Amino acid sequence: MKRITVFLLAMAMFLVLVLPVFATNTPPDDNAYVLTSASFSAEGIDATSAILIEQGTGRVLFEYNADAPLPPASVTKTMTMLLVLEAIDDGRIKLDDMVSVSRNAASMGGSQVFLEAGEQMSVDTLLKCMVVASANDAAVALAEHISGSEASFVARMNERARELGCTASNFENATGLDDTVQNHVMSARDIAKISAEIMKHPKIKDYTTIWMDTIRDGAFGLTNTNRLIRFYDGATGLKTGSTAKAKFCISATAERGGLSLIAVIMGSSTRDSRNELAKNLLDFGFANFAAVSYGGADAGSVAVKGGVYPSVAAKRLPFSAIVDKADAGKVEESVEMAQSVTAPVKAGDKLGTVTYRVGDKIVGTSDIVAAEDDAKISYFTLLPKIFRWFIIAPES
Image (cartoon, rainbow, N blue to C red; front, side, top):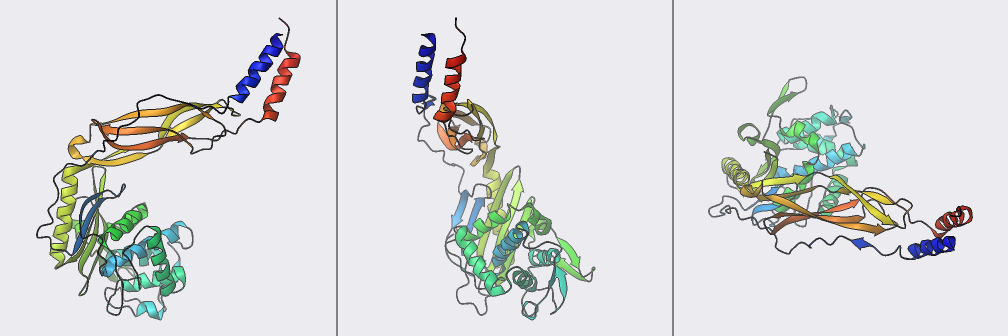
């Protein structure tokens, strides 16, 4: 009789495996945290367009006509730089690859390092020339090395822009030279997005933070076109540009105290006013805002109903946000997590939520997810175990 009772209880447990049980924590409220720091004034701004964002989150801290498609001059090379970095990461090219310079690349005007047709130079050196000295000949040589032709490379530039959500950009060359182009444009917002993507590649700082260097065994000097690298505390890059059509442009990146900012200026009347506006925007960001970040962490385990294993490990996903500087130490967190889930469970399945608040205002949330798989136990796996116990269980 006892064996029959155990058998029936086991089968009943099998039938209710589909019922999950969740924690009863109070759900987060709908009050979103709003930055209250003083705004940067756009009055009298010497630029056609500008934007300030936080690099990691993409949070916009200031914008002025940021979606206008405008000639970007050599700030175009932010996209060229990104595609070179991605080609290196993908293994399609290597830094020590030697590039044979074509007649087309050698014919580029504007900023250049005077490459000669047939001259060979490494990817590493060409990248340095493009980033530090804004060399158009180096940019085209890299584009041809990666894609076979500048035209094919430009097609990929436009494709990559769409992938990044850059809706106001169109490229006609890899350099930003604009004497003969018809519709070669970028917006300040798009440049900021591309710049943030570039800065995910730590290697780029090996080039963007160079103030002066040489190539050809010291015979030719390079000086960074971005003077903020030398004169602005925390500057990390990124790219300047100027033509008669575009006027003076810059994407300026800087980092202080864990806060990484990107200021984009387009259409400023002079180099000095462009640099001054970039510095003022960065100063505004560092004076008023702070980044709060939480890395991924172990979140214990969650019971699994009907799984091969009784529980799965859980982990909290990383979270970062921008808050007013005065609130940087006031962020608190609350956790809502399932007490149990039903198999099958896949790594990455959501198991709960961490909510971050300042007072009663929600700064943001991050997920708690399964760190491993747990397959659903099958009838044919469970039944033999029950039957084995039913047959061999001792009398008592």
